[in-house]
Image 1 (cartoon, rainbow, N blue to C red):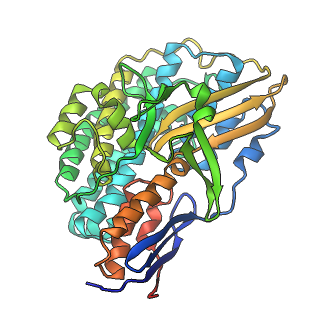
Image 2: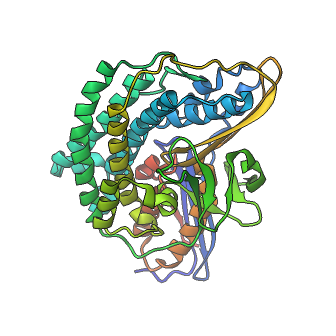
Image 3: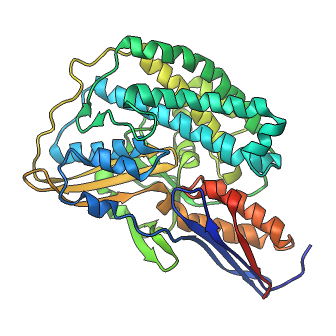
Length: 432
């Protein structure tokens, strides 16, 4: 136990992340006075790279933003470009996109659950240490992740940075015989996903809740993945075409990532817990049953239980992939023509970590004149900092080492693109 009134917890390097970040917490006179989740990675200039490119190129270029969720970037880019060009995909191609997205949800959620987050709850510093004692658990996670990777590879052409997606559809569509082996693999994966829900439901979850407004796409009748309208737990609802009227980004001194807020409302959270809170009634019966057995209620406002939500969403994604494979009939053409025209298009889809907005402006030749990309992590940063401030305030009696470890876990609850680095924090403590 510590009785110091002045403390500075300064974590300057978060490695192994989709981005580079740090954490800074200052305590003065026994009160938390400053919390910053710093992202200091140099700007990547993707939005600038896109200017002057043909309207067919954003899906391939933006896929390189993330090696974990490239499908999300491709899907949001395609949706925005097709919106600008006035094209709507036929049902068969739209279903194939949803199938591809299911693969990304599976592999991304399982990566976070097994390799990044679960070791926190079990007292291990990493999944490698966990594997020494429970090899069976890690192997189950890797097998489940591989099912997602295989799905992305068959439909997307490659497991990482898929190459088969194009504006208007795909370069080629799979034959039914290509999907049949996947279906058998997914049947096994469904049992593994259900076992995962039961496993994580047994973790010890700290009593911590937030009241942030939560935002996600909603598609009445089914769980939103690749389309929907934007809705919040505060009752706000708007079409994706109006997202710039409501989602406001601003620079902050301590981050090269923009902070987002809802105009006139403040910070908010997006991600699996937001999706679940807004749309849990549209999960499949089996996924709802798994959620109820795991102790999830209609809303999830304890960020520690986000690992359970991810496991439930994995069950849903596996089931949905099986359903789409069972009903699959190869579309007559792999893509519809998307003629270039001047216009502005907006698109949004549900990346594993939350809603991902894209906006493109095209000239008459179909060249991109401006681009805007709003990823989930930048939307969540302000709310995460707010949670960290309250989290630290309630644990000032802990030693610096213990407090730092718990802050690392608290950050990982949100699965930000910097989450995987938190096993490698380099802690500096200024004792005031």
